[in-house]
Image (spheres, helix red, strand yellow):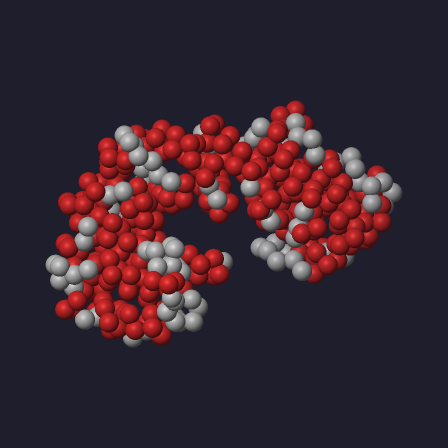
Length: 391
């Protein structure tokens, strides 16, 4: 994740590299902050794009992992923030959005500075905000927990009256905006249709990162508009070769719980089958459990559910011990293993008798599994294994 952030912050205002693509080292970036404490630099006629670039250099030093926020003298940062606070009236729409982006990244929650930014947006620059500006303001407001109704009403009205008549948010911009609206419990009913239409239209440009973030959002909401669901499902299939075990797990669970068209479920199932060998115990436990609990032959109609269970059983027969040993997750390894084994037992394909016999022996060695959440699985498994003559 940190490597991704480093690439992202490599040059925020000139993605092509600018000026030969030269990079500053962390000490040079910290020096940028020291320079910005000079209040004489902040005048009505200052080059605020350049000053913002200097301030972002400080961000890059923090995110490089080689410097930490507390290692920078607090005086420099506080003085710099004070200078920015006094300069808010001189900033245009794009500049105030970029400043908010930096504050969001640094998680700066200076009440006075944020209040000035919000009022400046409300009173002066709202009419000039681009979709990108709005997205940056929304995301940074979420990062710093800014919930002013007046400010958010201004953003929402600007979206309705100045964006959607002729413009659209790009995919990643819209992802940030939607997550901010939902997480902060903002957004009026008039936004529903244009936002959903925009998302359905730009779904073909979503990245895997965008999609996974949106899946968490949809899970929290509990519903997805039909056209959005179809277009995002199609995009998942287009990007399936980029999916690792965890992302495949998240997407197939989302597909099953939302009754996605069988053609899309089948395509992701085929990818799972080709990547069983990279799955962790946590991936396998989540995938099999959701098949066992939510999958219905009559409604999902996928082609590969049984094949997946057979492939997972064979994989478990060869790799169970190493999967348990290397398990990482919120569940104890024996609980994750129980979920896999119980889920597999719900099918009619319990073919690896050695695997099941060994697990029957292990069940008696783990009395801790008989907690409330697991008890029914243990009882169910013992009954099925007894029927097979293995317990």
